[in-house]
Image (cartoon, rainbow, N blue to C red; front, side, top):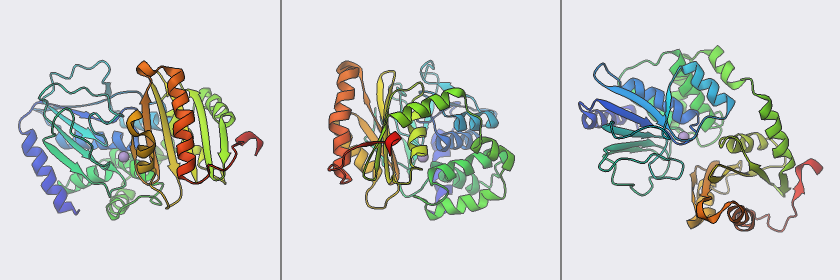
Length: 345
Ligand SMILES: [Mn+2]
């Protein structure tokens, strides 16, 4: 798609929202840089003196980089846990879709909503959206947001430019994985407009002591099966810890795949990373989880979850350990390999 297509989509969205006064932008639970930066951009795009545009998400931000990003943007994200959704007259889901497992928004009946995302469009829930702009080939939702800004000739200030840049950077592993031409175009344009100090503060952010405790638990819970590292984190304090560990453990020389799993509150969650071209992580994650829960993602990054609910914690952990982990090892053809604890490699 080109900028002129984004202009058309923008006009369609603008006309649909019309003179609605309260818009809620909803990111996925435990928002990552892509959803945070996209939300910041759409707040700018849709906000006016007659319209209040707020941002909400479920879960929390545990990852220090994401907290640093939020702090430097001075952005307020409301918790879906507390928020009454009835007063809003339009909802826009960013980098996410309602009912997709990683989104705990319970839309009011007849709520008008739209979706801007780069994940495969799932089943309409609880009813059809009135607006969709889904671009599966794009590396980041932030790129779509940038195109909307460009189409309207809005030049993002340094903070927002940095956030969008950082989002594209994390979603595409510095343009190396899953980046489309459009992502490159956005990246190149943003490059000259960012606040390098702010970027440095995010990328090299300080971490609490808890981070090192978590890394210790992760290292002790990791085993290598051929070229796949499986990390059992157990209970995690923050749900985004699972993705954080998966990202950092992909640095292991032998690892072409990482499957990191753990549980937090009522959910068992996992993150999958893949450095090969052979298989699509998102599709594999969906296939492994099947009817047990929900999963999705892209070629190199995926995630999913199983609700613990009535199944109970022990049953859910057993299900993961005895069905999903072996299924994963088989799918990537290392099921004949014995697991070697990372600490004994
Ligand atoms: Mn994304």
